[in-house]
Length: 443
Image (cartoon, rainbow, N blue to C red; front, side):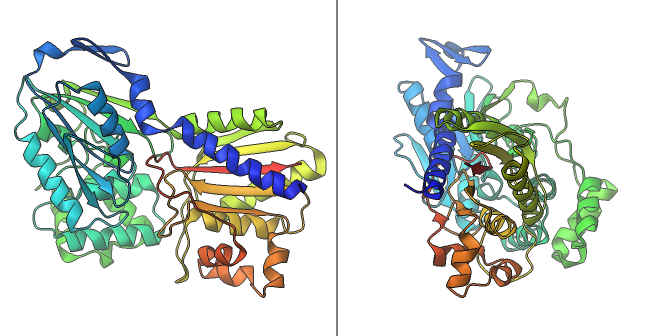
């Protein structure tokens, strides 16, 4: 086996090890345990005899396997439940109903699913227990626009935010202030029932108020923050009139802010992260070491324009090959987080595929080096690829096929570039989502 082939195979194996560590159902069972009439959730204990009904609600790419785990924990006590999941991200369920819906652009199916969740929560009373399952994708899968704003107008806002390069924190701050469920408002709907929310994090640093737009936690963002975000990207004038009117009213105090810390609705809530990018990174590191690599976790907090982040990673690969720093070969440098892409062309791709394209352009002809970048949800941008894998020979192979990498990069067309080379990483839906994993392997 050639060195490059082994590096590429090892990169895929390391990525899969990271995925296994954040499998949602197993994560639920690690943190939630039933002992007869008692439910142990991390460091808290609940007496199930105090609750008449137990409901399960939630949304996200990992919602179905999380819900399946809860059905096993409550086989005799679960009253009913309703969750929203991305199309194709399903697991077998018995008592909990599932609404498949659109992501990253919310659709009418998601609106129907949210309405059913809110209808279920209206049944919840003070002596009931609600268990929420929230994961990445929850923002799009829980669409319930504020009064006076249509779903189509909310979709237009999401598209603008995606196209301008806004990061997930900024996107969610805006979406929370145009919603009836985000930013703690799902907790308001569940009150006065007891609420436990299990969360799979897809946000850098794991801020609870940002993951899926924080439907069950106090919101720190304000209408003023939203105004500053829109000003930063210069998109306010492109917003639908109804959205602009609401934001103006929010600044004037004419519509209510999202619920903040100290609100009574949060007195009986527990929010717990059960899977994160850090857990996946640590598992990937262990697998790389098992395969014989010296390892370095660069960061799990990486954000920014993906092609610029790619150039930094490529520079590290060159340094390792040239000087043996910051670690000597065989080396595996690992990073996590989530980058963004500012759309300049009309091609097809995603942040991970564009990362690999930009990186391989910078390591062209660098020997014995491979780079992999992929989304842990199995979907990179609007494609069916999780990401891509490249090496020091990628650009040479492309040129032999008359593929100009710069043209593909300029047109944000990384999917078609790697499709022609056979270098797409396709996993199918993984039913988890803890952002991205990136690996530089050198021998």
